Length: 553
View 1 (cartoon, rainbow, N blue to C red):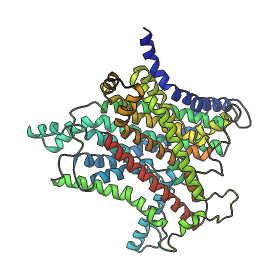
View 2 (cartoon, rainbow, N blue to C red):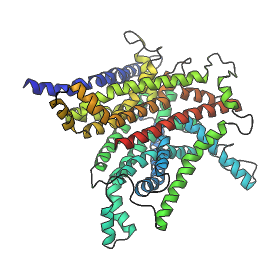
View 3 (cartoon, rainbow, N blue to C red):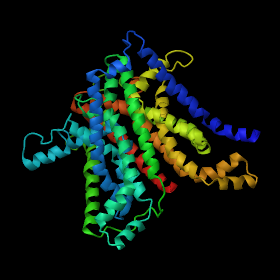
View 4 (cartoon, rainbow, N blue to C red):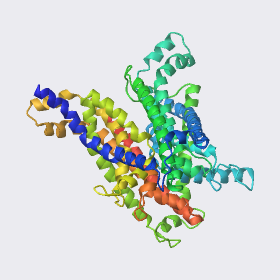
C-alpha cells in the first residue's frame, strides 16, 4: 500500500517545480493585474469585461481579429498544403534543405519579418525596383506598405511551416500501399486523392489550420510593424490601452476575451492533432520515388517556386540590402556601434546581442530544468497529463503584453521585488517557451521503452545511473531539439520584451524596433543589419532543430 502511494506521488513531485513556476510567474501576475484593473484608480475606471465586450469599438476589433485570422489561415493552407505534399511524397535534389527552409520562418522574430518584407516589397524593395526597371514607371508599382495584404503575406510566410510540419509529417507516416491498391482497382489519381488521401489527412489539415488561426488571431508584432497603425488585433489594442492610454481595465478585459477564444482554439487543435497522430501503417521517412508524371513535376515545381518567392526572396533581400551595395559596403554594420543621434539611453548593438544571447541561454536552461521532469510526470500519470495539457494552453493564449504588465504590477514589492531586475525578461521568456518545449519532449518520453530502464535496474544500476547511461543518450536528440527551440523562442520574443526590457538592457528585437521607429536612411540600414544578424542566428537554430528532429525519429 505504501509503495503504491509512493508511486502515485512521484509524478506530482516531478511536476512540482513547473507547477510552482506557473503559480508564481503566471497565475499570480494575472491575479495582480485583475485586482488592479477592476478597482477604480488612476490607471483604471473599474470597467467590467461585460461592459468592455459590449462596446462597439472593441467588438469591431474582435471581429477584425477573427476575420483576418480566418483569411490568413485560408491563404496559409493554400500555400502550405502543396509544399507539404511535395516534401512528404517525392524525392528531388536538396529536398531536406528545402524542408528546413520551409520551417525557418516559424522561429523568426516579427521585427526581422518586418525588415525582410520592407527590403523585398517596400517602396525601395527589390520587387519594386525590378518592376520599375521593367515597366519604366517612376513610382513603385507595389503599394503594399501599411496594407492588410502585406500583413496577410507575412502571416503566410510565418505559418506555412506549421502546415508543412503537421500535414507533411502525417503524410510521411503511413505507407502508400493504400493508394497503390486503389490505383490497381481502377481509380484515377485524382479519385485516390479525393476519396482516400484527403479524408485521411483532414484531421492533420484541421489541426494545422487551428494552430495557424490561433497564431494569427493573437498577431502582435507583424500587425504592429507592417500594419502601419491602420489595423489592430486584440493583442495590438491591449498594447495600446496598456502603454499609451493606461486603461488597465480595458486591456485586461480584452485579454480575457482573447484568452477564452485562444484556449478554445488550442483545445480544438489538440483534439485534431491527437486524431491525426493515430498510426496507420508506418513506412520509412524518405519518399518512395522521384516525380515522374507531368502533374507530379508541376506540383514539385510549384512548391519550390512558392518557397523561393514567399520565403527565400524576403530573407535574401534583407541580407543583401543590409550590405548597402549601392553605397559604402558594410556601412550599416559599422554604424551599429555609432550613437548617431547622441541618445542618452544609447546601448551598443553588440550589448543588445549579448543580452539576447544571455536571456535565451537562461530561458533554455530553466525551461529544460522544469520541462523534462514535467514531461516524465505527464508520462507516468494520465490524470496529471490531462491537467497539464489544459494548464499549458493558458500561457499560449494569454496576451504577452498583458503578462508583461502583470509582472510589473505583481513584482513591485518584497518578497518578489523583481520589477527592476534583469531576471524578469528571461523568466517571461521561460514561461512562453515552456508549453512548446513540454509538447516537444513529452511524446519522446512516452515512446521510450521502459524495459530498457528496468533491465538496467535489474542488473544493479541505480535510478540515476540508469537515467544517465540509458535514457539520456536515447533522448539526447529530442532534448537538444527542445533546448534549441526554447533558445530560438526567447531570442525572437517581442511582445513581453517590449514591455519588460529596461532601456539599458535591450534585446535584439527591441533594438531593431527602436531603429525601425526612427527616421533616416542610416537608422533603417542599422535595422536591416541587426535584423540580418538575428535572422542568421534563428535560421541556424531552425536548421539545428530540423537536424535533431531527424535524429530523434
